[in-house]
Structure formats: structure tokens, C-alpha cells
Amino acid sequence: MKSVAEILKEIRPEFDFTTSSDFIADGMLDSFDMVTLVAALDKNHGISIAGTDIVPENFSNIQTIEALLRKTGAKPLISPFVANALPEFSSSCPRTNGLSSRICGISTFRRRARSNSRR
Image (tube, rainbow, N blue to C red; front, side):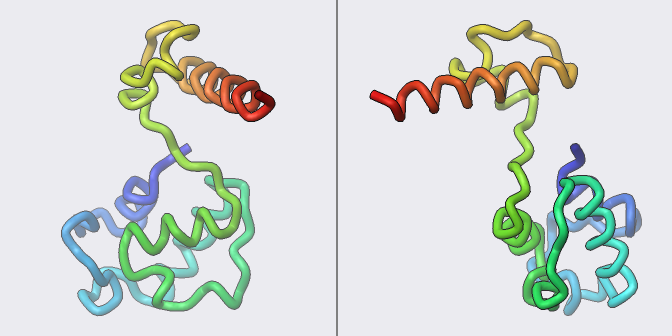
């Protein structure tokens, strides 16, 4: 799964989206780019963003886009570096940078969270 920043970079590689607090006001995204971004987010995260949520306020910066993804039920992206650094993720998983390590870490974390909530 790609991060929001990676998807934005694919759409408009000439911009550094991490430096802007308002992509639209700064001229980094136009309406066509927003449609392209929505399609990429839908496909990448396996979600469907409602038409009523496709407004400039939800696409002004990386944080607002990530908030929209959370609202639609998209699962957060966990960096392999974070996964390997946290004991909940790394204790029972092989230390690789591959996808299997991330999936193992997420599964381990979910199992522990479920078992802790039953106590």
C-alpha cells in the first residue's frame, strides 16, 4: 500500500507536497488532479470516497487527506521501520523489510489488542 505522499508524487512529481499546507491554493493540485487522486486512493486503499466528501477542504494537505481516509475506513499505513521498532510488531515476526514482515506485525498487534480487550 502506498502512502498519500507517494500517490501525490506519482500524480504531480514536480512538487514537494510535504512543504505545503494548502495544495490547491499553492497551485499544486487542480480539479483534474483531485479526480485522479480520489481514484488512486480508492484503488490503493480499497475504499470508496463519497462524492459529498470530494471538496477542496479534504484535499488541502497530507493531514486532511489522511483524515478523509480514516473517515472512510481505510487502514493506516505502517512503515516497516516503525513496525520493526515497536515490540508489539517485531517480537514474533521475522526482521525483514518485506511485505510479509509488515503483515505479520499487524496481525500480531491485532491479536494482542483483542486479547487485551477481553481481560
